[in-house]
View 1 (cartoon, rainbow, N blue to C red):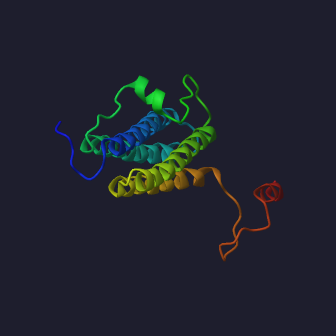
View 2 (cartoon, rainbow, N blue to C red):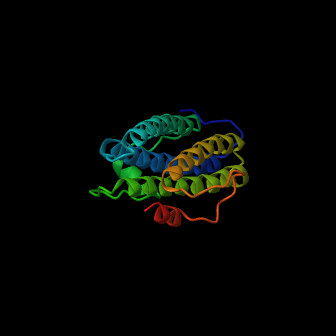
View 3 (cartoon, rainbow, N blue to C red):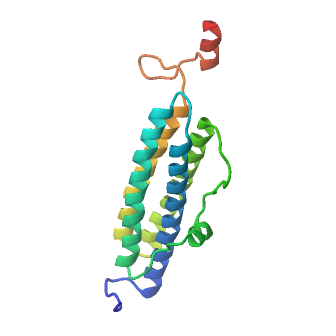
Length: 181
């Protein structure tokens, strides 16, 4: 590929490519976990989570593709092997482990939150250190999608009584459950 002349130095381009490859790795590992939990979920929330996770892994697939294409636009090559994903990823795999449904949801929340934290740092680095506003904007969009996915997942494991004005009630879930019994 001919040398790019887009206003970024080779060092800036390589810095951005490295960040994007780390993001691809995190998202790919999260995709695998989401797909696995989609297959393995059981219990009363099966249908809801099965469908939600299908939506999430489809969105993750699109985001991974867009991120890999961003790497190519900047003259690099995206990571594309399991070994590379595991080497660059900041989230844990938990190989051979089959958690219960609540733990599945919590692990995905944790992973989305880790990716969100990473993306915040990468956005700042792209804008301030590498002077790549385009990639910073691209990553901001990804971050917002992960924030929404984390919120949706968090809603499955959070739950507390609310007053009609939307404020948290002083009555805890445990005391409500105890009064019913």
